[in-house]
Image (cartoon, rainbow, N blue to C red; front, side):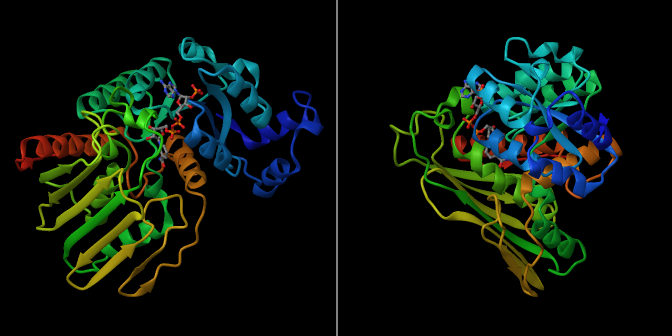
Length: 370
Ligand code: NDP
């Protein structure tokens, strides 16, 4: 942990020449006048989502990108130049365990293909650093539990990149539900999908993705059903359809419809697909009101309305808010309204395991997420 004052001293001192610092970066530092702790983050896996997170972090006052872990030397060089990352904070997949000897990094954000999360998170934990891991946290609940255990053993925190858990319109719907404004909740619908392109990408390779659309986009409906209904499901049923078995090979799901039942009697009807566009919609229905959001989980702005009218909370880049909030969770003991820890992610993995089992067997699968 360091302070914003320390960062200011560093960038205006001898470490970097003034000409290297962008006017925008200095302006944002000056504007904040923030003197508290700063979460110093190294990002692992410099792909498309990592690039988005890195850009968003430029607007953070409580979190700062200070390091990289990558298998691609040219990307490391580019990121060093773009984000003023010193050589001593650059690692590759073979040597990142050495991060344990680096006092200038507090946390590693793992943004690699799904199948790599398990081993990489466990190695980061063993190096004594907090871990932020992208969704899905792992390929299945067994792996997820092992990651939680490893982080507990190493006494580091494990957080998962559930950016929607900090999104203002989403949180307003949850506030309304908690205050009973929708009455008794009866139904949730979650539609999540897009037509996936390049058949050669890792998302369509079971070894790296762990599955298909469910792992990647269906997880938003799983997680959204839980936070919109406000209960944990007790059963799952599921049906899989496949129209292109050349593109979606064995174990890579193209489309799954699934249903969940909740203890209070509510039911959820969800669709996860890699074969249809324009599917990013949540609908929550209660005895005395409703909420609908479309788009509901993309990068925003999220749009939505309830029986009381349009949701008007302002849009702030999701990844900026997420990293600010995660810094507060790690350094100030903040309890988020919706949890973003490993145990939260484990519940989604248990449900996804059950969805796959239900689709395969055609049976109703019981769940116990307590
Ligand atoms: P990309 O393919 O764009 O990037 C993944 C990066 O991981 C690569 O660029 C590479 O970086 C590294 N990598 C290491 N080993 C491999 C390998 N064997 N094959 C491919 N890449 C490898 O993926 P995304 O950034 O889209 O997704 C990464 C993770 O982030 C996924 O778990 C995904 O689910 C999650 N995600 C989350 C989103 C959210 O909104 N929360 C949105 C999008 C993705 P390098 O060359 O530096 O080693």
